Figure (spheres, rainbow, N blue to C red):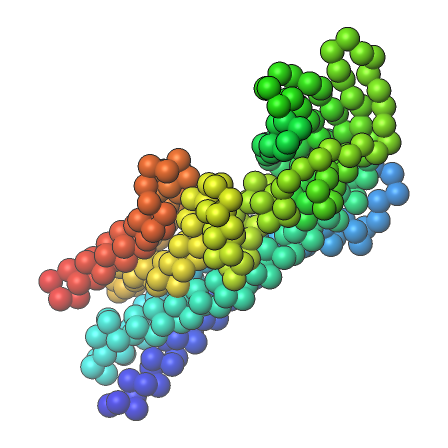
Length: 365
């Protein structure tokens, strides 16, 4: 009996794993195709654009996009696996062999947990690195017209103080996690807090002790605007501090997040977003396992009893509500209305307990 249970467990686990890979590859291919078509449309008016550069720019940012769909891949894969097993009466055979629902759910839960560990420790650092490389390719792709990149997000701000006064820097886009800026506007104030000058620059590069502003135009009160090919703006910011201001938490690899959190706290900068991202990545294996419980709760009914459409819709609705809950807790954490640990782990607990209680009621109630 133990040998039979082990064989069936491996079989169910492999069926679930193959379903997850199939769904994930399908979504990856679809996102890559849509993103490539959209980027081709945006670059249709840009001269001297090569197809290989467009392909690399698009392909390198797809992993981070698909990473956000991983939980839904597990949910859909688990539902399809159990529905197919039920349709082919394999669940009936497993039950007749003495296996309970908990025994043939356990392999999928274990596989989902391992997938979550791999996604956190390996896939996330790779996707973050490729996303940063994609930004550099995108800046190269659009050349001197960074305005085409502005639709991807809002403006970025950083504040600095030196012995000469204060400077507020605004950038439309950034690459290399804030070391290179595009579409830069700088407002400078003297040591007494009075406005000094406004500087418009095509780009800015952080060098030791200075921001190097490129193609800058300087506006001062009572003075005609002056153009400078290169203009130095003194700064006491380090690359680590700049990254804390410009790098989004999603763009930081998992293994570097503790260092970012520590640096932000010592620099007096807000680290709530990085703490939340770190806790979400830690909770990912458990979140994917919770998705299996949710899927099993709505798809273990015998296929011949009917109501398949209702079961599928129930599973999709449960996953969507859990996604909404995670977004609400994320926003509350970023607004410092909820602790990052609670915000990251609450969807895991709600999803896992909901699926577990539903299964407990169906199987043992």
